[in-house]
Length: 125
Image 1 (cartoon, helix red, strand yellow):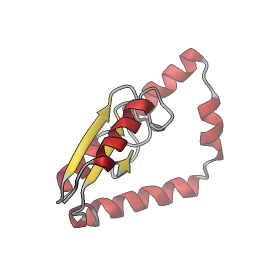
Image 2: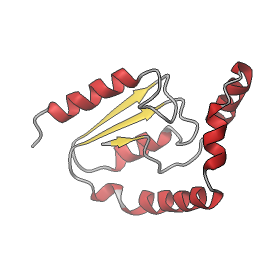
Image 3: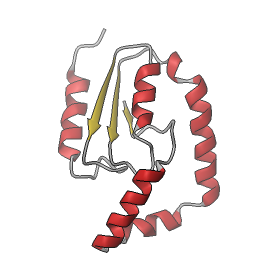
């Protein structure tokens, strides 16, 4: 199961849109989390995402659920499509149109949990 899996890291358009909305609505709690993330950790994660994009997806042949928030300001939503197209095994792509990066805590969390439960309860080969 992949939730907001990053192979295309940072969506500049979504990032700016999200920032503008947070400024407009005066929701600053996100910025305190961002400030705690060391820059070096972010750069290492970006390198890891580039590496994984090149080598790993074609090797995965097990049933996989890919869930991505379409308003994700961190992981570009195209990541989900890229992964879906590269995987070899049975796969399902679920896009949550109103969700951002923290899809487990966002407005469509119940839909996410229902999709995960459905996926885990299905008979797999």
